[in-house]
Image (cartoon, rainbow, N blue to C red):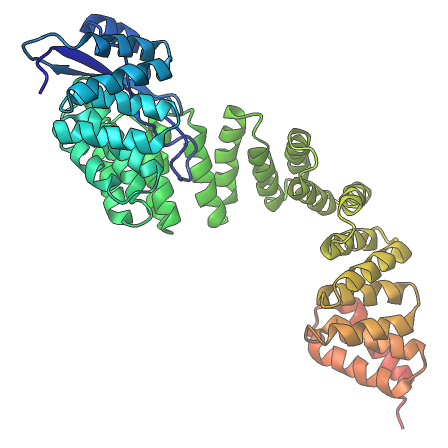
Length: 466
């Protein structure tokens, strides 16, 4: 072991390598700074915020008291690290560890430098050497665990667990929280119960931080434990009232339970916090539409469409809300744009046809339905729509053909019996018309008053009393 006294400043920074539902809930390797006095390292940490998501920076100090001064190459290498001259630092650090393979500080700095150069395997190897030389250093175990997690190596858990049992050099609570969060992230998929316990442990160290509760809420939601997830998201929102992530989590829970007023409230918070988030506007629009607030829904979906021009799903939502609001011409215009972009999409042609049907533009509707079934001959619902449009266009032969195709994929319903009866009636096939009028009346159950009146009066004409 080299005899020297040095201070390693280690910065744990957030990164996006964790695959989790809550945005910006991961962290990257701890970053060493040049060897300086504790005071200058503390100054570098001023202004960092433990509650910032995606930019959390927590400075820790590892102080090693030994008898002799560190090799000059080590100090110079850390100066290069501070200046982001990683290739120069790498050269010097390799000399340090070659001359003293037990220099865990040199291996630690080399691990960070190799990571900065994109040499992940070399970075991991260097961190392993650092931990092997001195196993009880919190920062080295944490960084090694994080690097291993990035590359999905199974022993990541081992070193992150070790970090949870060690003491950070400084910023004790922040460091321990980060270790437990890091462990929880890698356990989430395979050991959800242990991951949840780790999130709760992280919250013990930083009880005013929303992040452990956000991550726990996401995990519970993925496990379909919605009531528990809701409580975690609520706790996160209490700790950070401006958290769009917490509001988004709650909105997801409320939407699953069709709790639309609560979902609306949560999504409005998301939109206020993230006005450029087109997905939040779109989701809010859908919720408002489900509540029957179609004019307000149109406003949100129009905003979403402006933020994400050409997004097919958003435009579909907008067209659906136009339809619900009775704005058939507006809906048709949106669907025509969609059909123009995707002319081979049978469902889009059918949707346009339905909109035209509501606008009583029956010839145009019939054309769209014919296109839909040509593109997808098994689209049973489209045959029913085609039958109705053809009946309105007085094309009774086409009506019957469409109904015959529909029954191959879907069971008969009262309306299809009536359309059949009416078509046969107009084609003067009295026997089949009467039979289908009876089938209609036997299944209608009083739900189609106008059609039932027509059917009864046509049967009087078709089946006069003998």
